[in-house]
Length: 67
Image 1 (tube, rainbow, N blue to C red):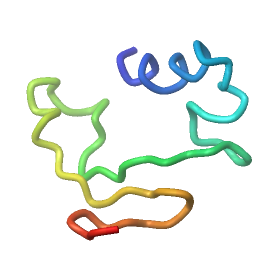
Image 2: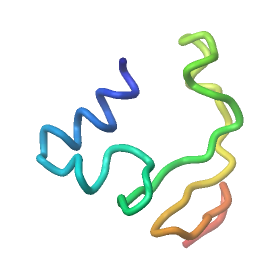
Image 3: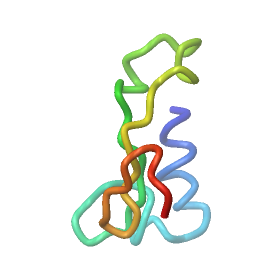
Image 4: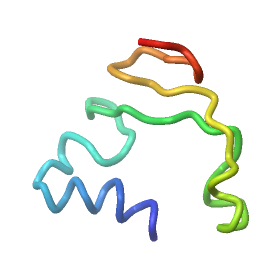
């Protein structure tokens, strides 16, 4: 529920859920690529999940790279 609150529900509140808030064909999506599934780990360890990279505007930015 927390993940939905900061993604699709937030886009819905801004009346932009038709453009963003979920990863679907035709929608805008900048997102992080994580080492572990945040829905499958103990909530206490969420802060320890390593970030592999971020996709910004369709371009992969590896973790630790400068833009």
